[in-house]
Length: 226
Ligand code: E4P
Image 1 (tube, rainbow, N blue to C red):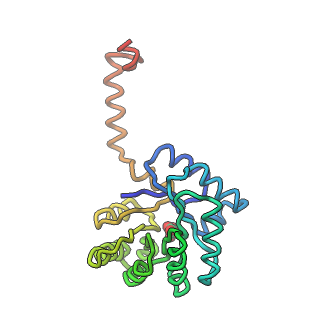
Image 2: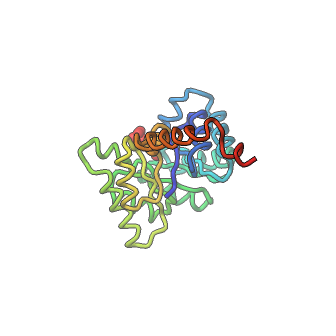
Image 3: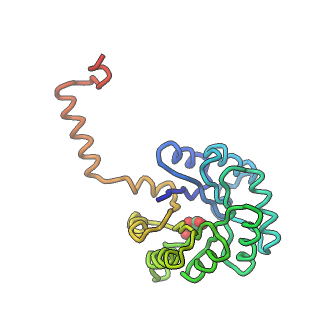
């Protein structure tokens, strides 16, 4: 399982890199616009924080295959390292995916809502497909089922494309996607906090600490072993 963080907020990315085993950052135009900063500085700032080994997925704003390839080429040479251009699934997007792969640019096909969109994106050469779980749930569809069937169909055809499940609001959604074998998820920074939270964990930690203090007071292990 790969965990990615779905934000362009530099402070949040720094925090997530420090505390969580994240393998990358995903953005989209909404996420970028929310920061309301110089685009080049923002993208380079993200790369500086995450380093070259973590993946940076940046969404194209172009619509034709030629323009998408041009954007992807510029972005890749700007940020270097593990880079994936996020391309919404359209006919031009599929053509762009194939063109980007020919030019050795990683591709994440995004705005995926159906199993067949994912399948054709994979056949076109996408490295990742990003199905939107919560947005499906919001229209009384079943986001987890779509993720599950995408995982299955990639297995049936032995396709190398990975599922990067996206658009999450709850830990339950994340858990269910993990149980159906998604290869990766991208979540907002707050959801990381929720993923590791349990009140009984806090109770356990407090009780360990109280029991220790009753005998050893403020002294910690290095002090006791000096
Ligand atoms: C990531 O690829 C998507 O852009 C993102 O997860 C969408 O999330 P949202 O539905 O919370 O906007």
